[in-house]
Image (cartoon, rainbow, N blue to C red; front, side, top):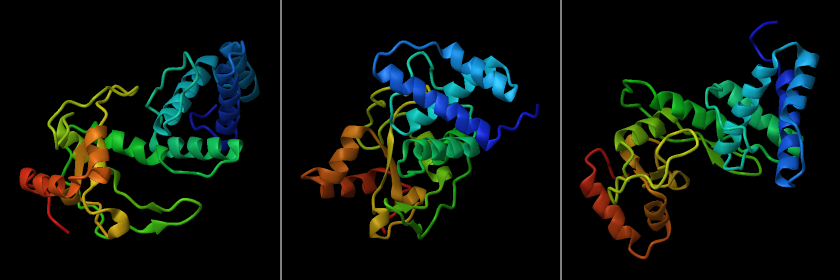
Length: 225
């Protein structure tokens, strides 16, 4: 059969994964191989292919901030298109609103892994996509560049990232100094990489204005908007 996975096949894989996930959370016994065999017989792909696809789904779960099925370590070589499709299917099967993090974060990961990443133009006026959750259009190259530039260190306190993610990367969060909701741009001149503690302080800290002034003085690329 062709290498391309149809939406039907991906949905069947997601349904199988979610069934395992439910049983895993409820400490019910199940055999992963049984699911792979059923999918293989239905679609004609090898059982190993489905095992790896389940690991891709685990990676999407990781990007969504959710716990994945035990023993199915996230495998990030999923591709941004498939990651987006898988997230949509997860939301569809569970009857939840689509958030849209997986495709974006997979693009970020792809750009970060490039040996040379040119300074991105970014988006001067991010557009809003409305639904049950308001979201702004972001450039994955901007997030990738900022994280790559930080070299795994918080740009505020200079501390190493507090932990390594399941994808094997230092965990830092990208913060827009002028919020997108306030008309800020999605450009490297308005974005910094922060450890979670500093990120929360920039949002909620008593001295956040002093922190903002200090970071503008510290990081040359930043420009007030």
